[in-house]
Image 1 (cartoon, rainbow, N blue to C red):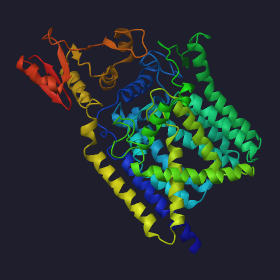
Image 2 (image 1 turned 90 degrees about the horizontal axis):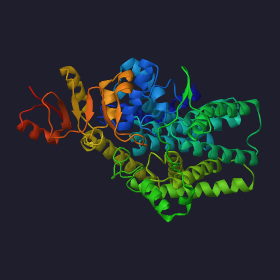
Image 3 (image 1 turned 90 degrees about the vertical axis):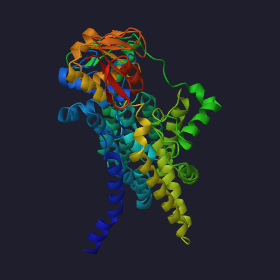
Image 4 (image 1 turned 135 degrees about the vertical axis):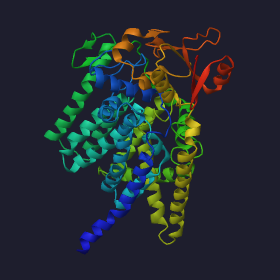
Length: 518
């Protein structure tokens, strides 16, 4: 009886952290952030198009990669969103749920992974720090397709560690690593590099032995990677485009150069940029981080450094003895993620998304060392807990009170209501301000895919980032010198007064307005 009660009590604190973490990731998810990011909107429209018409916006059935903007977009977010779009309709909530759910699942996985590699205390610290982490909270609350990558890499790592003791789990590791390839193209480099390094380490320390499950995991990974290999060959001109009623490998309008440039590894600027993004105020993109809090709270980096030193010492001892250690495994994963992140051009938080979980592990390890070192003076580490609690409270207060005011312009708050008004009024011609991206109109208008495909006109075809001149009832760009009384105008709120002075009736919606002649 006492043992059972002890086991139940052992889960109370992890459960509390999980509930807090889930709460801040799901509360007001559909309306905070307000509006939509343009990539969110396009991913949502692709999900809607495939669900409703059986093809994506370009007419491909079940593509392994979207053409979308011209130079492509990852597909996994849209496929995962399809069930939610079917249940809830094409809404902000529906397109954000896959990301939010994966982020919530990641919380107990962090606890289980670190508890297995180290002990329950490190697992609990890792869970708590992840639950209140600004980077992970903000990542979970909008539907950028690449934001799925950290959660899938975490699951792949967890199932790999489980599989070292129970090989059937390796199959799930292969599945998660394979699926991650459809979340972000940079992982086409990160995943094979990391897995090869892991394999060498595990064989060297004699922790991994060949088994049918290992072969099966490799097989699962290769099968999932095969369509993307075909995609690369198609777009290099080696193969013809593959287009069937059941599966497609499209040829892009424009093949972008790789974002990975290994020469950056020898550039001091690359190291400075990575340091600023990870340990400073972030990347300057308000949808990724708030400057006052950064990715992990600014005061965390000394503890990360301490955790890294402790891990390095223990990992090196294990390596010399050819003994597997959790420290060695995580440091190798960190090394691979850091190498790829440093090599990226135009670095931001989204692009370096294979790295942050490893840094959280370092932070948990550093905090654990402080707790152990200060056993004789427990007031010191508990004071640190208080600092994190206060920082978390301030972050939550900022995010849930004033953040929408800050993000409203970038996420085009009000466009959805404006488009709904346009449809309700039945305007035949609508001119749209150039600050509105055409993916927002596709999303909120729910434009039929055949209509879009047949009527779309591009201003800069071919291009890696296609600009749409018009489709359906919508044209993009408002020329106030050639206004037409038969056209409604979706404009910025700041333009409304001028339209009113010219005799137009104006309806206001967030950052935007609709002007029309009565």
